[in-house]
Amino acid sequence: MLNDVQQRIAEIAMTTFITDKDFNEIKDIMYQQTGVFLKPSKKNLVIARLRTRLRELDCPNFKSYLEFFKKKDAAELEILINAITTNETFFFRHPKQFNFLSDYVLPEIIEKKKILPRREIRVWSAACSTGEEPYSLAVACEEFFKKHPAYQYTVFASDINSAVLAEAQKGMFPERSFRETPSGIQQRYFKRVEIIDGRRRKEMMKFTSDIKDNIVFIQNNLLHPFPFKNIDIVFLRNALIYFNEESKQKVINNIENVIVPKGYLFLGLSETLFDVKSTFEILQTGTYLKQD
Image (tube, rainbow, N blue to C red; front, side):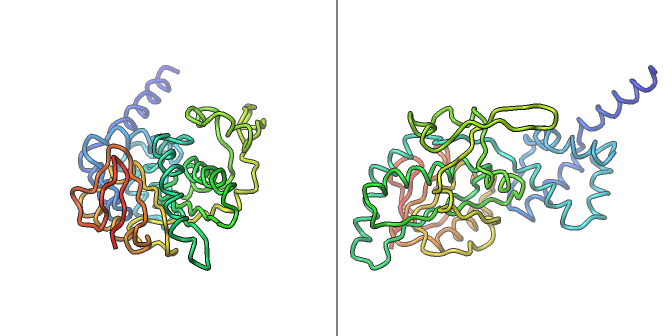
């Protein structure tokens, strides 16, 4: 019995350590496939995100996992990418940006579009993770366009992570996702439901509004061209921090190729475009305007 316990402790110890060589190999895979640059400080993140996968495969260490990885097809690559790129988010994150969207950006856009025959506003939530951001954008648009019924809107929600994208499409969220949700929004657009998770029952908030039909979910690598054009607003928040300068430039170039002149780009509040070449001009912290 003691030997079994000691063996289990040894197995756990091996999956909580990664050599520089193995980390660098995983770092290179992520950079080549996604543009995400894992700094040495991300070693613990890699261990935490992949530990469960090693145990599922009975891999005693990261070296054996990489040997397994090289023998497999794209399915394991997708599992690796999904594990590393999972991020936490919540509704109406950075409320000041959503206020700026509703009070300034949307009025400015419809003023420009009122002479056009096609009055559609296109918003792209890039790196949308589990969906809190695109649903927040859809709600913000819905609340605004109630007073401007002549206009239509579409929210494109993309992410490289197929697992979180599938979760986003379900429209089911934990209570913690609503910590900055404006008063009344939760009651108007969500209802509390009980679901079975394994052997446990837990309460979730389900998005019940038919405006979900205005959200288009699509898997997309930010290093690759986005398939939709004429985007008026792009939310790319807290994603550029994972790219080095070269990859960041590619991402911004791809956004420039689909966003309209005088289109708006929202970044995370700690992110800037000072280290890349672009046609975007800063308006305020985290908000940029594309020049003609």
